Image 1 (cartoon, rainbow, N blue to C red):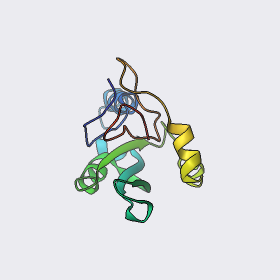
Image 2 (cartoon, one colour; image 1 turned 45 degrees about the horizontal axis):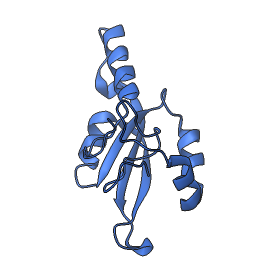
Image 3 (cartoon, rainbow, N blue to C red; image 1 turned 180 degrees about the vertical axis):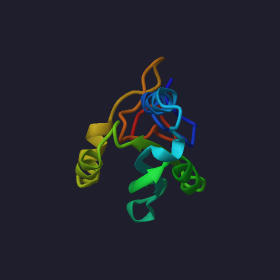
Image 4 (tube, one colour; image 1 turned 90 degrees about the vertical axis):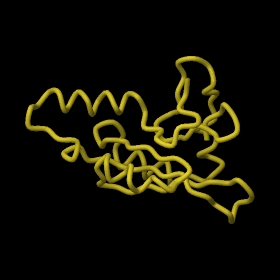
Length: 127
């Protein structure tokens, strides 16, 4: 099932990458893993129940969680999972282009939203 209903929508693959790095080196800490925080926040200029995604680079997972506490949703993407360049390229697209890239059914068992997209609040489609 997709991450619908969860505030923390960090992809399972990203979580596995983090866990693998921590297991691989006894001196590793979560704070050693740097990435991008994506935050889903209200976008009242676009209409009722509209949201936009903003990115904050060079964060650690715990800092991302803290900053995401009052957002509609958030996710942490380690730099090794999704590069800053990929995030910047996606966010430079128009809202319509982003919507096309994200349009995917996420309600079926085992399907998740693409890494740069969020599970829709009131539907089983990625946004």
